[in-house]
View (tube, rainbow, N blue to C red):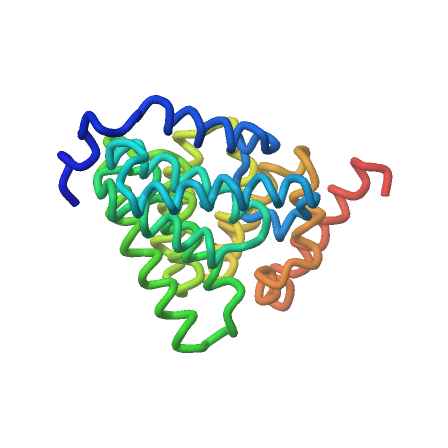
Length: 256
């Protein structure tokens, strides 16, 4: 796409940008959201605002009057995050693909594209060729995002770890979970729980228990582990009694 088309004096760039930003500003704040929401319900008014903002964005993109490629990529990423938050991963994927096409250097857009592909894979039948294809594509986008950062963001590493885990590459998943934890102490407990899941699936039961023990006093992570399918092999192993004692300890601390 020719940048000169975006820099033409014939278009009111600032005005168009403000219109797009105002359209999104009419929606609930999306900052701080992590991961898929599972499809948060939109009110009729919110849906209308999102559809209107999205329609304006698409029209101005086609007319090439919305801003520079970098600006438009940012708007498309914003639209994608709203669609993803409200449960429409397919539409989010389309917006993120456009964002990356407009600005291939956008680490954030590429990271969100990889995440969204992994979320779509999660909704696909286990073991299907389509699931594997989505995961491999997610991995490609996330690895590119990682290479574009120095050092990589914890969220990029977490998304990579989750994707490697889904592909059965538990060693690489564990490494990225550990790296993410080191870079984002505020989310250490969540990363530790997911690390324990990968270790358990890899048959590293003593290591998985060590990680769970570290978070037994924080949140409900140890309680979640009681029925988490990812700990099935651990529960059935010779380490099962130790795992059961850990869950019992977690419950006792919460008066359960």
